[in-house]
Every structure is written in C-alpha cells, then in structure tokens.
Image 1 (cartoon, helix red, strand yellow):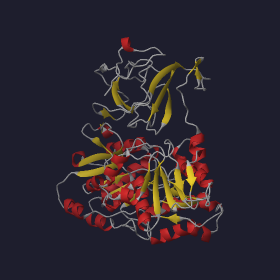
Image 2: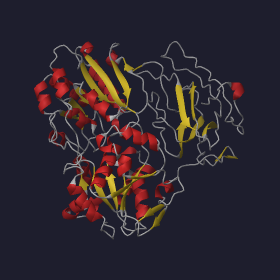
Image 3: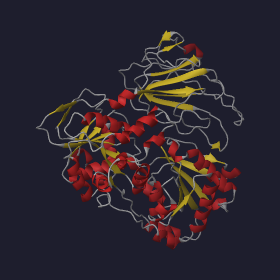
Length: 574
C-alpha cells in the first residue's frame, strides 16, 4: 500500500513524481463545525503523484476538497483503470469516473473522485466533507491548468507539450480484433463483452446465461473480454458460482481475456459469428466480421443506448450501431416495440416476415418468491418497507428525481405514520451516504446499501411492501419486474412507447406514473393505499412472464434454431 502526502512541502515540481518507494501519511481534513457552510479549501498539490506504469499496486488516499476554489482552472484526471465509481454528486461533480483502459475525465470547476462520506448528509445540503481516491497503478495524474476558452488541444497546454495526455479516440471502437482464419477451427459464436463488476446486474447476467444455454444447445461459445477491465478472471469465476446456471461457466465456455489489449491473436473459423453486447462491442464485432464469410453480427440490445449520452459524439456512435448489419436480440418486448416505432435496427428496411426471422425478442426470466413474504405480511404490527432503486451511477435511473420525489411524498403526508415505514435504497455500486431529513422530517432517512448479489437481493425483496424504480428509457429495466414478482406494489415511470397498458399486461402490481414530480408522488400515494391488500399482491405476483431462462419466450429452443439459420448468411441483411 502506498499513500501520497498532500502536505505542501511534499509537492513535486511539474517535472518530478513520487517514486514507487515513497510513502507518507495523508493530512487529515479540517471539517467545519457548521456543515451548512460550504467553504472548505483545496489542500492537494498541483501534481498528486505519478506511478510506474509497470506496477500493479493498489493505492488509496483521502483528500480534502472544496466546491469554491477551482473556479478558474481546468482539472484533469488521467487514470489507467479506476476501481470505483462516483457515488453521489452534491454539487454536480463528474457523473461517473469508472473507466476501462486508458481514459481521462475532464472537469470544469470542480475535482471529482470516487469517495465515501464519514457521516450522513441531509437532503438539500451541498457539502463535500472527504473524498477517497482509489485507483490501480498504471498512471495517475491530477494537474490544474489556468483555464482558457481556447485550450482545447490537450497535447499542448500553456505552451508546454504534455506527452502523458491521451484522449480516447473514437477509432478505438472501430479496431477489429486480431484474428487468424483457420478452416480447421470449430465454428464458434464469439460473444464480446467489456469487464463486469462484483455486482453482476441484470444485463451482464442475461448475457452470461444466454452463453451457457447456447453452449448446452450445441454451439461452440467463446466469451471474449475485450478490455481486461472489471473484476479479474479468477474473481469472476468464483463470483459466478453463486448463480445456479453459471456455476460451471468456465468448463462450458471458452474464455479469452483482454482481447484488445493483449498480444494474443484469435484463431477463428471463416464461418464464425460474432456478437456485440453494448454499442462499442457491436462496432468491434462488426469491423471484425467484415473479414469473415458472414458480415452480419448478433446484437444483444438491452436498451436504446443513445440515451446514455448527451447529444455528442458518443450519442452519434451509439446511434450508428443500429445501421450496421445485425440480427438483433431485444432483451424485452418493450424494447422491440420502441425500435419498431422508431424504425431503427432491423426495422429500417425489412418486411414483417423478415423482421421476425432475422430478430428475436426475449423475456428474461423473473421468478415469484412470495411464500415467506406472505407469512410476514400477515403480521399485524410490523414496519412497512419501501425499497428504492437508487442508482446514482446511471443517469437514466433519474437518481436526483428519485430522491426528490420520495422526499416530497414524505413531506406531503403520503406515508402518514413515518415511524411505521422504513426506506431502503439499493443499486449503488459503491458506498453512498444515507439521505436523512426526507420531507423535512428529522427521523425519516433513506438508508443506502451497495449493490448486492442476486440471491441476497431477492431475499431482501421478500421483506418489502412497496418498490420504487425509475428508468428514463423505453426499457422497463428488471427491478420493477422483480419487485412486482416479489409481491411489492411497484411504482415506475412511463416513457414514450413504455406505457401503463404495456405494464398492465405483465402485472397489476405495477403502477405507472408520468416521469414528473407530482405524478410520481401520486403514484407513491396510490401504492400506499394498495399495499395492505395482501391477497391481491400475492395474486398479482404471478407475472405474465417466463420464470425459467430456457423458456421458449426467453433463451429456449426457438431462439437457438433461429440462431442456426443466422450462421448461414453470407451477405449483409441490410
């Protein structure tokens, strides 16, 4: 473990760096007694530290920060694989610092790191007390430059060449994998994924389960980690053993790690088929497939990904992927409806029969777990629990609006006897402070917990009464379905083609509100009025939805028979 001092006498010059053997204690932050005042000062040096790129040590440190000092400077953070993400942004700091591979986060006016708070923070207050920086060795540099409107070229700043600055080019997403064609190789389905975290969420889990079921159906499946990011191979294999379908993953699936960054050349059969699982892996798959007999790829579409970005280069690139020739596997009927409505992906040109033959619409398995829940609900005197999908690292989950609307609901008396209600926030991928003083009630807090593995998550749902989950997307996301299947009265939001009527076909446990403050508060009010009807909750927990992953409406024989046909194409389908 190495720590860098932030005392002024240890600040290196711009041309110096800390050696890998240096170690000093971090100065503690001086915290104002009145936390309503936001007047802390920056205490870190111009250059915090530089580490030998060949080392792989983990470094942590605590730093004091302010939201007042960096008004006329440009702050740059350059990292090689940061381990944890931004948890909360009281003052609009960088939304998400989790990156894979060499990248940088450009901030104007404020620093940004992954951080933990040592105490609770009341809703409405904007105070940063401490920030914890956690990163892996490779390279870490924090530099403050005088801000200039025309300082757009990071290669040269203040007239001095900066060799360490490397912008992530869009070309990186168009780099085909290094392949060697060999007709004696088995024909494979090659699934491209970026790294995954300990908290395997619904999306990555669905892909991994698809891979296993495809293998069991007779396909030679190769899982290709393109960037070496996320948890390491050993940890991932150990972590997956807690999921029944994935316990034997490494023996059923061929694995390649860090295909883009490593020196290995993939040996492929000319008749191989590649599959992308997010917009940039779809591009990599497509550019690789152009060298093979089948120029089409499979595109595992789990959301309308342009909405992940403002209208920028990434938005355009994500949108472009729906124009490359591909067989889409839509993760839900909700999502297929939206693409059909927008005439995107396969719906740009095909007639209906071709659309059906050249695509698949899955319904990921959702099981009802209500036996223990029913017994608990029969208790007359009990604390009622609201489970909130509070996910600050994903803007599409509308974290700020989620917290604000919940606080408003408390303030407007939706939860009449606050001492009989408990509020629990789940979904954050790093430690987050609790939110207290909801609705100006000093005794009402949203207690936040980190993302937890699926078995623990389902067990937690069996203790709850109301679920609250927002998703600014045509994709319903899985939490509202999980909540409803656990017998929770669930409040979620509409979005264009994602309507109350479409959710009603799945479960009457789901209340759909417009994604605006007053509508959401009224949705929570309706949920409170319904949550004591235990029998209806249990009845409606039986969703009109598959409960097994190999169901014919999910990843069952009809999909894999269609997949056999997709391998035979030799021309772009559009």
